[in-house]
Image (cartoon, rainbow, N blue to C red):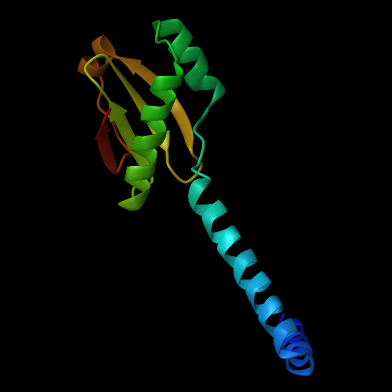
Length: 126
């Protein structure tokens, strides 16, 4: 990598001022483009096979709005450094592994009353 940077600097020094400016702008543009793409590429939420089967068994409908809410919860939790969260509303809850962007399981309100949630380090209300 250092060799590549040195070679680019040597080429820029040897080029005309107009060529130097064009090369610098194209490099800056490329860097800015990559930065913007990485910002706009929000992580997608995936569902484990277990989570899908639990949602089906428990009658939890996975809608695009719900997926957006879960994604937003995951992004907020990630900003706080959480790794495993409980994302919940009044009717349902989901355990999400934040680093892998994966919903681990889905739970209904009735089951929430009977369970203790362990191995989570954050909770987010949908």
